Length: 385
Image (tube, rainbow, N blue to C red):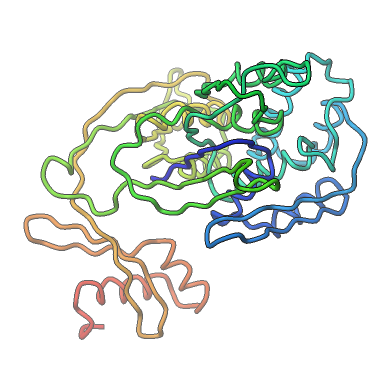
């Protein structure tokens, strides 16, 4: 399981957050193509590397006049219901609209060209989707508190957006406003208070730097993962949350998509079982196993992506075998990732599906053929191949 953590220092705008997400591996070119296709206008995006993990993003698009929330939603009419980018852009724009206390048919934000533009907010949602995150943990942020040029800091708009979030904010005595409506809306829509991270390892990190320089503001995005090598004994026993719901009016495609979203959002496992409900109705039970910290986000996905109107949730203990991972090389040079589990001195080797599938797609070899070779090599039975 992996989680995204975001830390901020000083001024935090949308492009600084984008820089950090691009640094983690979000495909800039793919996002640019999606933006141009969605909004039918040229978008230029490039990153300026400052260090191995630090960068500045320059995003330029032709300035357009402000559009209303209703007009903004019209651009996404062609995307299917439940599309994660679409739903999160709607969340962010609705937060901005409510903070501005404006009706949905009045000009609210620029289509492009501004820091808090529809194009920029969509780029953020697209980057999160490509990275596979539906939410992020946000460490305590700093915001000014005072009067600047006769105006309150932070502004009423920023206060209203932050007030609808669960974020922790340290209001300092400075009079510089650190958030923008766009960055505040992004963190409010995606973010939850970081809390204690527990024992995890750093799987990747990147630094987004303000265009005004490091001393003005920066955002660090960190991916934390549970330790891969799980020790034996009591540490191999842990507690999980189980979520269950019965659905009798969901198609197989819809359930398959829901399971995909659940796994990408941090579920440990997700399954469907055929059942009979009252009055003899055939149905499926969707069961999700997850960690406590991911429970709320996964419940939201179940309600959003299925026809469920209620679910059961309870805590269970589980026992898992100690495991580790290694990569082996096949005879043709391709690599396969192996999960190795141990029990009472016995070793079990399981090739990971994604890497086996990749080799099959690249070589045309049958799945069973690649799987058996990888398992034999991992177990030391290469002479039997």
